[in-house]
Length: 536
Image (cartoon, rainbow, N blue to C red; front, side):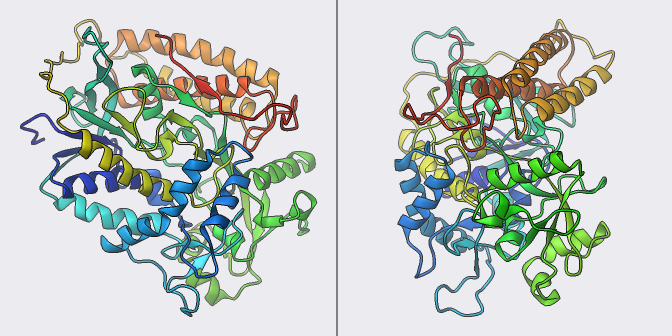
């Protein structure tokens, strides 16, 4: 680790949001440290299949994309945020093209030089993609530039533990960041990294659920750290469940892209009959919350383990050209999507809420920024429109870099000496199985009680179980040396608590939050956000 001076910026997270922010800052001459909890390419961005929503076709308009986003968000999107993000879509794609990302080309250039697909909730074809592995194409391109950039220090397999603030150091005045504690996963040692600016791009918290499309890194670390540092969070009740993950005991977290339905894929019951038009007139192209609830309803009503997604009516060449990665992966599990339907189930996919963030990524804590899935910007409202997530990462990376460049060096106060991590009163854990048991229990009751369909009683049960887990984890954390699993469990349990608290506050069904006790939206009052503030 070659850090010889206080870094100007520490970026926590190696997905699209973090990498694009780091590259923008480095190209402006700033020294940047990037922390990645595993190998750089193990975040959710790498696994994004569909693409990026942007107005690129001549027959599309910003107004249409804005309206589609507002409709999907079920009345609580922040319109000014939606307007700003959508209108910066083309510029964001230009930035990716300029750094070398390749996208699928159109067969005809009448509307756009790129092949644009259509996904659920979109009224036009506007999703630019690189076959069915868009995230991989982007991540690998950015990674190659980041690794060779002289202004960027990359620390892989380093897990952030907590942010060091003025209040922690008993420094009077406005609370701000001064550094961060980080676990070196190879050595097991905790290091102290000072910094004037910290940007959290740590992704979501879908690993709180038993079934998820996300990689193992999605444990809510940034949300938990920001909350403990004094930041507000919002709208965490809106957990998006992707309707179609491959149902197979060995197919861990393998997603069947939304674009399969966008290109004509049909959802079928085990007897081969379609069912989506019974739930929504848009059928398979309804927004994800509607499709996921429809699948959940049919599975429970009929007592079946899965439903089926069928695109075998399209030609084999079409399927191999448009979905080469998905086609091959399904073959590896014994399914040929060119000739047979695929068994699918819903799974936790995206955290629509997060750390309360303003238009340039700033949070309640001076010097702390957040972007990507761990943030709450108001773009997604009660349900994220497909392929708006990577767009949000790009737009906020640009905004956050500009904010940091404007504010860097504005403080004339000397940097305080930061205390080292204190392990003088802890020992090595004697029974690590406690951590794994608690992890398994959390994910199971979150799936059962705080999943696609909720009730007041289920939320109360979840809150009670979380309180017991928090007590056990606090005792464990106080007496034993930290490990990767303990840090992630601590974070995930805290975020689960915040999800439940937000869900208990919303006495209606809206978007991704559906409760049997309040099955309709509350249209008597102006719908708004669910905001939680830490105790001072």
